[in-house]
Length: 145
Image (tube, rainbow, N blue to C red; front, side):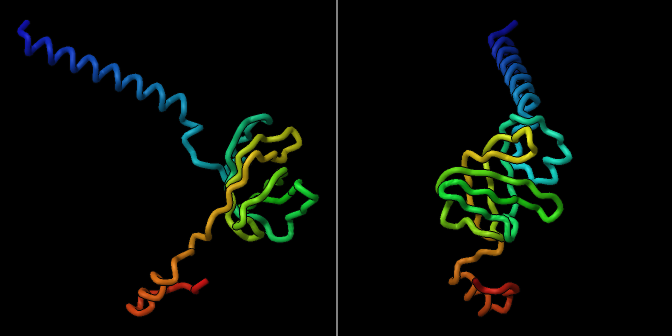
């Protein structure tokens, strides 16, 4: 075999090994690649208690109960609800009706114990300058906040 043939064989073998390794990693991580689960997806998935998860949705209106540093609230996706308990300081953007992503552990009681709470901007959020420019062009279709 020539030097060129040996080099091509070596490169092809290395690429095959890398492809198999990447495939095995993706197969092992197939459930953990999701950024977060909604309460409906979590209900369908039937995850065992004690599992570390990330849950996303909206803070349900009228469910935030504060007791010092302890906060209980419900995350909803308008189909299913999940009760969340958290101890600590909440982000400034946290409020009822606002998007939230919580990291934590699913409890045996069916609730969720959060380690961290991330508040999200409304999906319709747009800087005032951009909204004004769109209004001038006549393509603005939303309300300005």
